[in-house]
Length: 144
Image (cartoon, rainbow, N blue to C red; front, side, top):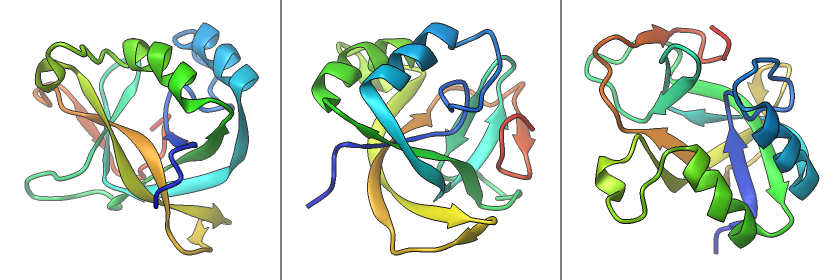
């Protein structure tokens, strides 16, 4: 069974992020979770302007094939997702038309940039919007 208390973040919600966007949400997330450690998930990272988007499959591939971020353990996932889904632009009435979707994906804890443990299942926000003006971040690490 998946540990639904784990959340993988890779952009404005990372504890190391310094962008103005997400400042309040980062502080709020700090109060309701703890950082487990650096981690990575399979996928491709795109620069969408003020924030990144993780895409699972990309035509033609490119980049590292992994997105680097961090795992957080949530104290009360139900309460967190009630506001965090709104921040990520998820419309509960029309989830397929939302900018992101939340799903369970495999994540690996990392040390010195290498995978260290068996995969853990964690919630990840997957970008599902257009990529017309987005740029691939080949390193898989935000900021690009």
